[in-house]
Image (cartoon, rainbow, N blue to C red):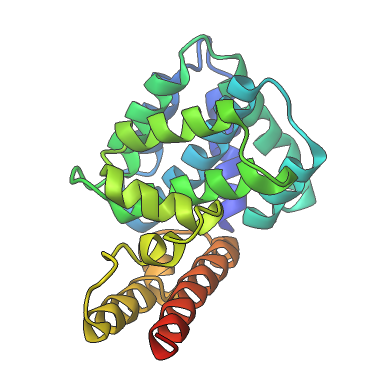
Length: 239
């Protein structure tokens, strides 16, 4: 049985409950998949992405076709499961619980409990990918994403590095993307670059429970890191 079949069965069970709020969803993930930690991580990540995407759409007030396509780039949902995914999306969007409550519960479900948790960063990256699909991150979306980062315990400097992968911050952009101070020796820049490339290798992302489709986001992330490094290298060479 595929991940989407398991997720579909799970969504059917949750959406048939009398309340089906965020607490029910989180508890159901823990209970239904208690015997398979790897599957639980993969389902938890998918549920978090779907639910927080819905909350972001509600905060922004509109869902564009570009955002729908961006979501589909992350999750290539089989046709027979699209209705179930839509049910979970609508359930989260209708839930009276605010997005902060969802973010807190999803952090407990997916996170390591430490600051700058890589899986929570993956979720934030996915949300950025959807938010910028129509060409820019709107003010309400930016406020939403920044607050999500705070709840996820992503430190401000690290958040700025994530933001810089998606939004042009100007001249300091390449250094912000790599999360390193301007003026550091080039060997330190190179060391930092190699670590980021290693940490974001597709095999590592899959090992921490991300669906195969999310590799597209990882490819975009690596491209931004490569571009930043090359920009710094060119600048130092011509200095």
